[in-house]
Length: 212
Ligand code: PRP
Image (cartoon, rainbow, N blue to C red; front, top):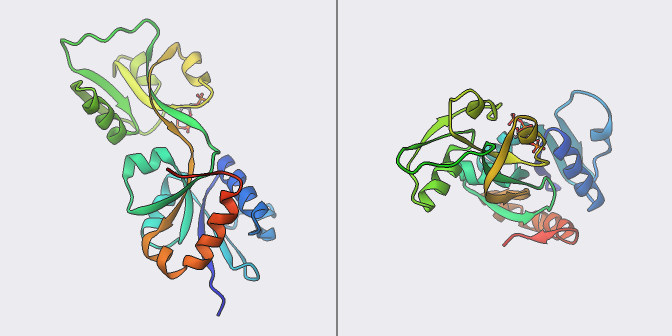
């Protein structure tokens, strides 16, 4: 029986770009382009089965082996440290993780800095690396509100175009790490389906940059 590779794609705009890369690399699945609400699509002839999952859940599917490979943002990989192989930087979905604050903010070292974020681990690691004591306020979205309402002093969040910060009178204080979409693989799937995964990897790598 032909091996079928299970591939978790991040639902949304990034996912469409990712699928276009897979299709151009020789792994198309025409039914995925039909406009419907299905979540699973298979092209038996090519040996691929795609499914759309919430972007932050891709790594969970791959870590548990429900997907053999998938595409996740580096932000998610740094935050959750899933037990997966990171194979390739796809060079899309580029943005950065940054500290931002209300315009004119200056840090006063005689008190603990209050940091609002969805990315608690990334924020902890960053401030630990510079030896700054902080209190984390973990939020699930609309992080930019926190310093405006006095809930925090600064935020650690994703900045892409910078529009959200600008429109809320915030500015970047420090860049922490560049972010982009990464091809990841389940560790045992990588052994069992190695030939097929290598084929996908090599086909995609021609268009991108191998992970360091
Ligand atoms: C992210 C991030 C910022 C925004 C930055 O939010 O949290 O709010 O994008 O983009 P910009 O620099 O281009 O304005 P996202 O849309 O992913 O949703 P979220 O509020 O759920 O985090």
